[in-house]
Amino acid sequence: MIRIHVVGCGPLTGTTLITKMMIACFDIDLCTSHENSIYVYPPRLANIFLTKMPQNLLVIEPLLRVMPNLYVIYMLRDPRDMIVSKHSMDKDRYWASLTYWKTYTPYGRKLQPHPRFITIRYEDLVTQPDVVQEYLMKKMPFLVKRDLFSKYHELAHPSEQSEDALGGIRPISSSGIGNWREHLPRVAGQLQIHGSITNDLIDYGYEKDGTWEKELERIEPDRTASHWPEHFTKAGLKRRKRGKYFGIVPDMLGHYRLTRPVRWMINVLFWKLSALL
Image (cartoon, rainbow, N blue to C red):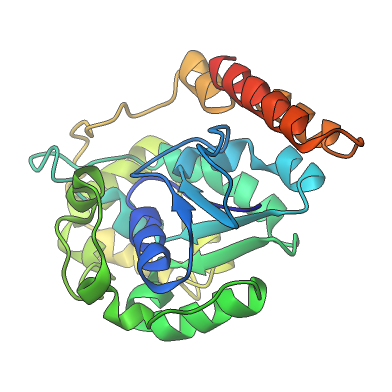
């Protein structure tokens, strides 16, 4: 069984969108309804099992080492657009702060060279969906295309949770790119709380230099609380890293000559235990 797992540099980075595009446009015979940890075990045997959970970026490294059948799609998005995005569950507040970008991206940066760690920019996905689809097929040759990513909205039948996360099923739009310029007080406030992101923006190609910060001059910072807490607690960060190494045990055991039912039972046991640790 090939496992594809989608992670992101934070919330609202396009993980739901690309997951539903893949389900609609590729021949994938097993997936979960919305978000599930990498530690969830497949409910039945299948050729390709697709799941997504953005925060699993923090635990994915050891699994890539021992699972030759694991492919990870990493969604990257301009952090300024990420922090000014809102969710249908709370339309009155910004959804998440820069703490996600500051915490998550070092893990993504470290894994960039891995051949089964596939980085997709949100901006490319919504402006060149069919190009991104071809790129995914080159990185994962086993994928069989059923239709074009650009036709995703005609084919998708997401769960209610996924549809809420997407804000409804509609044609792919690039309207969210550069939206941060309409929310300069929010951006200024987040930089005041979390520090500069200019070096990251340059490294990831979102800016050529630091001149973009001039747009924030004479802007009164908005330090209003986001939907999610402004910073991770130690306990919260520990929860996001839960099961980091414990989950590799069943896959290491898979190298031994065990019968298929025995391997299946071991995996079920360890995936369940991993979710609890």
